[in-house]
Amino acid sequence: MYYRFISYLKFLWHSKNEHGVHSPFIFKYVTQCLYAKKKYSKDKAQNVVLKSLGYFQCQSLTIVPSSIDFESEVKKNFPTITVEPISVDLIYISDFTEDVLQAYIPNNKKVRNDTVVILGNIYKNRKSANLWEKLKESDKIKVTVDMYHCAALFFRKEQVKEHFKIRI
Image (cartoon, rainbow, N blue to C red; front, side, top):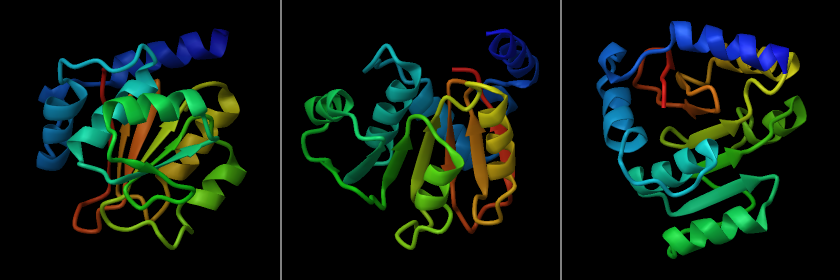
């Protein structure tokens, strides 16, 4: 509990809102998606996933580990989206470990330039925070958006490697 409190204070100190973002791609993502008024879920990470599904007009989604409740929430709000074992549009990893990350990113052959990966609980404990820092250094991941409750990863080859801390 103490670690989460201190990490949240550090996050607040270093995080920005849309005014601190200079990347047009991330600025649009923050202003038109993350800061959109519509609220789908009380869980902040799941809310980000649902907003991102609509913003990026995703056709498929992978949920790791599988969650029947969240899958039904997705189907309720986006009936045309298919939930697949390996998606190319959006991958949501609610509680990540090194094994899960290796299975889904960056070695996944289906991951493409516009695939979005959202990770939950990146500051759950010191181990997950260290894993998050290690993941940000990957050459395949070009842009990360740290929102404390979750994080978004982008593989956009046309973009310079950048890391953002955004308050939601």
